[in-house]
Image (cartoon, rainbow, N blue to C red; front, side, top):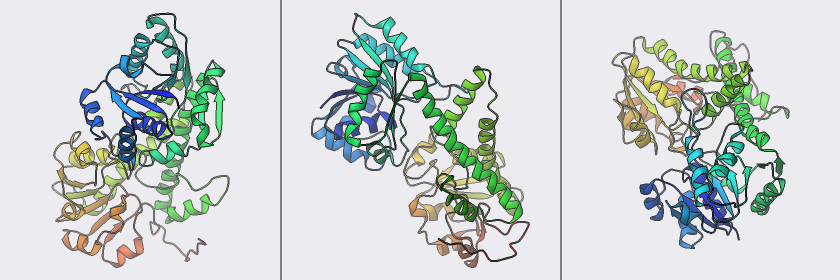
Length: 445
């Protein structure tokens, strides 16, 4: 059993703390938000993450997980201190490190015993050195500490599984003994471990996210070409994915990526490259293609409806992906903005993200379910592929619409079936574009 403190109680911090507690450690979560801490003490989470509430409540009841706003209290017995605070876009392309700076200074001021400080937040290369200098400057006495980079690779919607079954654990430090000590926290997970230097560990996180974002933009670029040539991008991706050099992951064409990681991290890596005198052409193209996918929705609606002024457009899904309430950089927000700029009336439904969406939008009619959103609409746009949308009564949807136009931004439905039902169905590059298919495709599955 180890004494672990986690600073920050959002996606990364709360999941990390809950998982370490579930592994038998004593964990304290620190957050400066008093209301958030009060709610966590009641078992009320600030985020939607499948299964996380049960783990938090179970470990809190067992006395292994507790929460506080006090650094002095939270660090009293700490052997390991994880920094898991937000590093949002600073508005200039870089990462805003103000929360990291504050956490590092607060750690220094509360330091009463030797600790290992672990950067879990996604931070620009060189932040480990920055945290070291801040703690050195502000610590009250000559207490030893080490700084280790341990980037997170959690996916919203499956964060618990990712935390307990990681593909790898990356650790970087100028103090190898400290990195090896942190590695002992993960031994029971029996996963590959990479121990390297601070800056390389920090870069692994950015490079990983940028590569995954590039795969998404690549298949969306292929989709745009497929659409013009009459090819089916789903079958193209299937054929590509069987190649062991490529694999099937992140080859689903759609409306592009969003969330708190990919957009921010690609932009931050671009910023770091430019600051270092490099020209990140590929990363710029990744972001440009992603932006264009939102415009694709508007163009397809205009192809069918002409002027969008006063047209009622129903959006199904608002979160940037299923199983989360996160709308940060979500495709839905850009689509809403474009539709409203064109004079359209927007109705929307999402199983869990409507509250967060309402906080950052105006003029949207949030509905009780998908059927209420679709009623009287000139078109329905599927934005997020929630499971509940797979089994909708589509005949009921069609009967309630003013016009039976369904734009499937995630290729959730079978296009032939929807067209047989009488929908004017528009998928993402599902064939039958300007060049019609000349032979029946046979695919081995």
